[in-house]
Length: 112
Image (cartoon, rainbow, N blue to C red; front, top):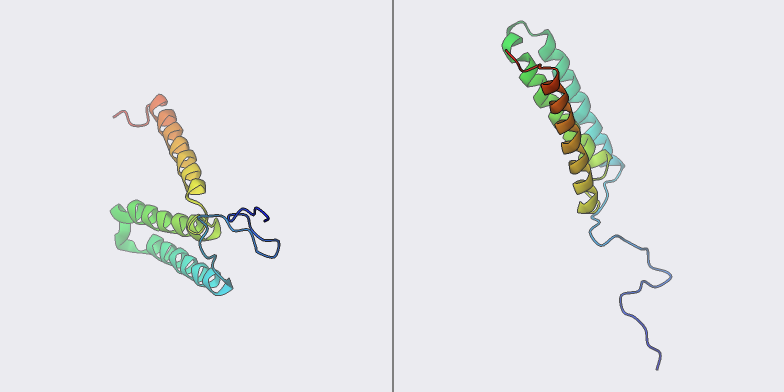
């Protein structure tokens, strides 16, 4: 009797990562691109609003965060791939933000 290992994929089966989810199709990418274009148009519109003065920077930061999240989750596939990739991305992002804040502190940007 032949001893076969159950977990080994057959030659005709595609190899899929254990945590991989379904990847989006072209329609979903187009939908995300339209959403990103709409957010960009909103950013431009907010910039030209007369009454946005004090709230301009926080509003633009919010829009930037939303666009960044959409690009990272869909176009970089972090929403659909293994969580390990997302962890590496978040660790790198946290390191970059920490380094940026340290440089700002060294140059006394926050000193009043």
